[in-house]
Image 1 (cartoon, rainbow, N blue to C red):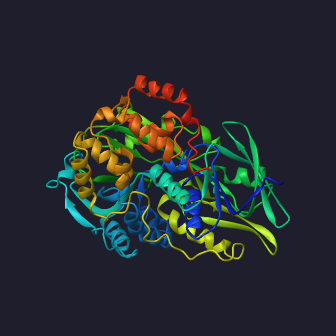
Image 2: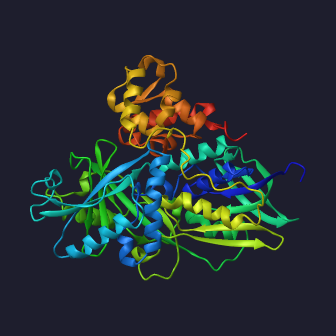
Length: 510
């Protein structure tokens, strides 16, 4: 067809793996298109436990290679995005009836030394009768172990990879579904449908990456018409958010009698995040939601440790996601591998297709490098790996200098409340000044929608980060949905539906 544009790579899926691959490929000089049928990070990538971590419990399943690679990536990602990621200490109370202390010490010793830790402090033992972290816990817990991992804003990590991909030349299309792709004349012909206008378009590509997450098998079979021996195991993970359960800045990791663990993590200044569950899932990944059994499980598991029980009525918000794990035949969901598998089709004159099964937030950058390594024969002339040490947008400041960024931003915008400055610096890093521009008072920020959300920030998210509707803004680009009332959320949705510019945030999709 005469109107078909030719790309080196088409990436299907706007989650962390898809956006990570698009960013890496664009930075190597490839011509890249990413198509996401909904919003960036709309699925699994905004429903994680928000951690960059090695996976302490994976040691019990002997996944030493996965833990080592994940631990190596912690400090790489921390250095790339110190605004949306930061160190977090985890307190593991010793439960005498579960794992013995010597086994925990051994695991933490390995955890400290497998990944070449340089920035993060090592583990230590705590006396819970003296340490402040013992205060919220039941009296029977007198000893704990403390170790390091990192927190990350998962949805913003996805968006910032997309922003950087676009800045490096990638074409990023949201609300755009791939409806069909076929091989002919040595390339892929990819048909897409614009979800807003219904318009169909076609492009050509030398290679396709299927990074559709929970929909990877569906895209492979129904859109690409290919059978693969690799298969996906869908596992639901759910979280609850409650009002702040403790005042300190450390997180808890709790062992359960079923050999699972859950986390209780400081969240969005005023809340505590508790999760996650592991439940095999067979239904539509787009309609996933927490069950009452999962809520009861998380409340009961946390109540085993907290002096003040966690009750169902304490829950102010829940979210669920479906992990697209590689199906390795494990007997239980919690035993299924969290490592990724890359399934390559093509070669010998056929254009390449690479399907991404599994993976986790922590290893997305390494996964992208592995994807492009496998595609090198199909895409000769691409540049060398480059993402290690390259900052994501807004992250161009020293790892432990976030306080300096906050102070500088506060000095420049003295009219903003301290909590607002901190939120904006976490969300945008050095781009906060770009978003705030020449504002000298709250009146310069435009209409106020509740909490500390103003029209100027909304316009920035629409213009620079593909935000379209209220959920994009309140639950993925931010978590301000926790602070706005139901009426305020509706007002924002109504305003956006009447604002035509919100329907075409196409700055990076030209």
